[in-house]
Length: 331
Image (cartoon, rainbow, N blue to C red; front, side):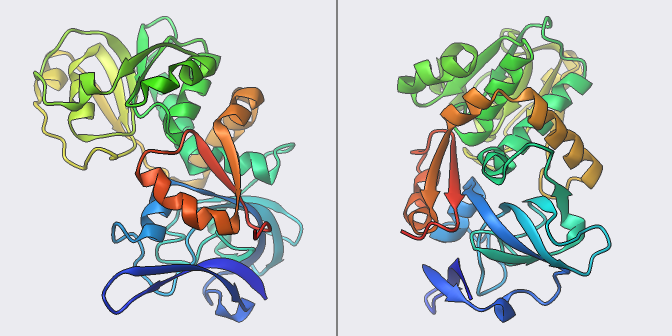
């Protein structure tokens, strides 16, 4: 038996989320690796699943948790043996396949990557999908030629998980980072991560002109909608914008003008289905390039039971940084 957060769909369409005790036989039959989960985390998508605010879950009942880290217990997959340390991000886990906000999970070995040497399960989940996505975004800027001497880099949604880690990564690489946030009270926090300037998200969140004053050599955007449009409109000639989120909305009410007249590149960042080699490259750099002290300042630890109450807060923008879940703490 093991403990997990369990989601069920009520007759009226609402979601029932509770802490439950389950038997291993209730785990998915199509997994070929059984794991002990030591830590998980709460991402925006987990908040949606637990609160039932959006149709994230497509199979019921469901254990949420798109991230997990721990050790392999049993495996019929050739790449994995008992005792191997793993990281799991995405692949529809917590949506169509039972996830990792639980003490055990049964997953597909092709979805797992090896935890970098010296990285604890807790550290891996302090990073989680949010931090891994931030690294994918930062790597994309570098690959597209945005250098630390190219000019300022804008990070939107700065006080959230992706934004906080992105600031820490980019500043560690020597970039001049401008942080956009709706929480100006968090300015000191964002500057402690390495931001050289903090701006009010209101400056980007309303409809704006398709071409605006060129300012940013690169952008990491986790907000979407008008914020992404304005970020593109303020990107310098030949600059690169990465898009990885849609907190403001899925729409993109933009003009082609910046792409044609300024040669702007818009790069989509997918963390869910990214191939293993790309994942391993991102996690290898996270293991070496992310300041442990900055990561610790971003991170808050909660128990499995507390995760139920904290999950809706991420949707309301009340969470700063990252929430790590100790799945073996039940109080």
